[in-house]
Length: 176
Image 1 (cartoon, rainbow, N blue to C red):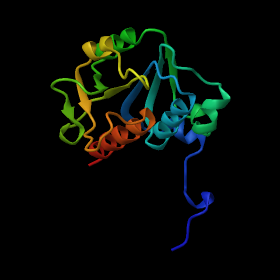
Image 2: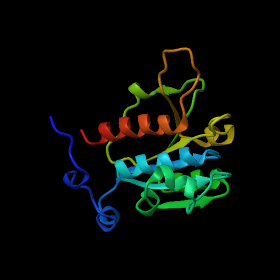
Image 3: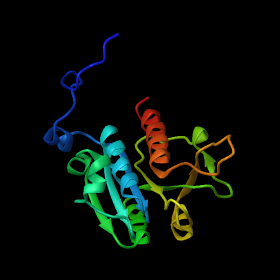
C-alpha cells in the first residue's frame, strides 16, 4: 500500500465546501477555554460538513493564531457565530425545531451507542468546558442528553475527542 498525497485526496475547495449540502448537525461550544480544542472542533466540523458552530460564553473566536494552529483553515470553511449567552442560542434553535442535545454525564442520559437519529431531524450538540462540562443551565434547556460510554478509570474525555466521537457517530447514523 502507498500513502496518498494530499493532491490525490479529492478534497473540496472553500467555495465547494460552502456550497455543499451540509450534515444536519450544529455544534455549540459552552465556555470552552482551550484554543487548541476550539481549533480541533473546527477541523472535525470541516471533515464532516457540519452546518455551523456557535462559540458561546468565554469560548474564543477566530481569527486567533492558536485556534488556527489546530483548525488548519477550517475557520474559513465552517460557518460560525459568537453568542455570549448559550441559553439564547438553545432557545432560538429549538424555535427552529432543532433537537438540542447536551453531551454530558447526567441521570437518565442516553448512551451514544443507543441514541437513535430520527429521519429529517436536525440536531445541535452542546460540548462543555474542560473542567465543568456543559453548564447545568444548558443541560436543563436541552431536549436530551447523550453520554459517551467509558469503561476505564477516567471520568471524562478531552472536549475535542468527545466532539470527534459524537460527530462521527451521528454522521454515520445519518448517512445510512
